[in-house]
Length: 367
Ligand SMILES: *Cc1c(COP(=O)(O)O)cnc(C)c1O
Image 1 (cartoon, rainbow, N blue to C red):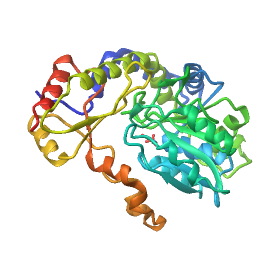
Image 2: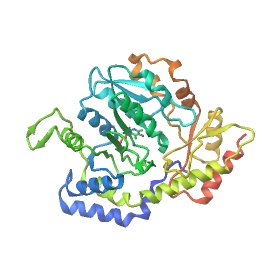
Image 3: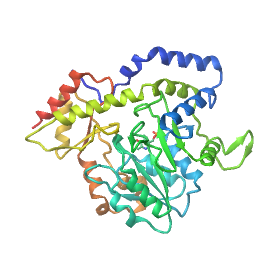
Image 4: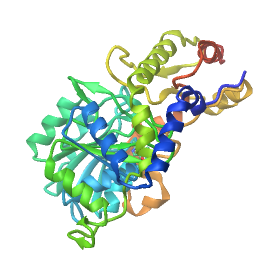
């Protein structure tokens, strides 16, 4: 048996005729960027998230930087962001010329340590970006209170949490705006690059749309120094097909996560799993386990033909790209520990019960 970390063809084959039809409709329509399929998906995704506006953009990184640009955040401004995240959350901040202020992770949630946010707020702080990493929601009421108290914009990087819910609100809808990526491997993935911004603020949505379209609302009239980051029709049409299945797929993700959590016991090696609450509406984008003997575990899993990954092997604060920031190791001990011990095991809709069992017994028998 060989167990791939991710197999998208299982999902895509189950809806192949719908994807084929979507492709053919766009081809016949002869309009390929920001047309009726984009508008349709924007409406559907806004409705799904229960927000007033959704703007389809080029990718998830742009979704974040477009929000920052539309909020006029730039040079001289500081933005609070978790240290344990994919680099895109931070690239968006430096792209607009603002300064990322990294907050260490909490070991129990692997997300931003909320208790450390307030002491990093200065007179230059303009926004907090939270990331619902691995599909697990940050406790939004706590962060929201801090943002309100200090008059900061609260932005969600929801690239790993499509459909997650807390206090009756979807991920992406708790602050001023939320950013989504539809990179193929995400819980809701296109068949190429795509992203979206969701918000209840009409003028913010309009600014995002305008900046993403060369800073232009009316052809050849430019109010902003814009960029080109638009959703194309093919991706929008594919996303409309896949959105219908998102809840079903997320339920399957939680089911597998629950099986892993309740069946992986190892008396010899300490395997730490998140105290994930599978009754809640977290969406288990990634199933992280923490193991000190990671190298050995990788060899072992490799020998059993189980593919695993690391999210993320080198923390952003140690990346050469950011060496000028002089981020100090001792401020990010938990993030460092996570990056040194994390292993992501296969979890996706389409994984069979036999495969799930095989992964469980492999981890139970590791010594
Ligand atoms: C994937 C991802 C992004 C970036 O999305 P792209 O569409 O690849 O640009 C941003 N933030 C997080 C947390 C992600 O996982």
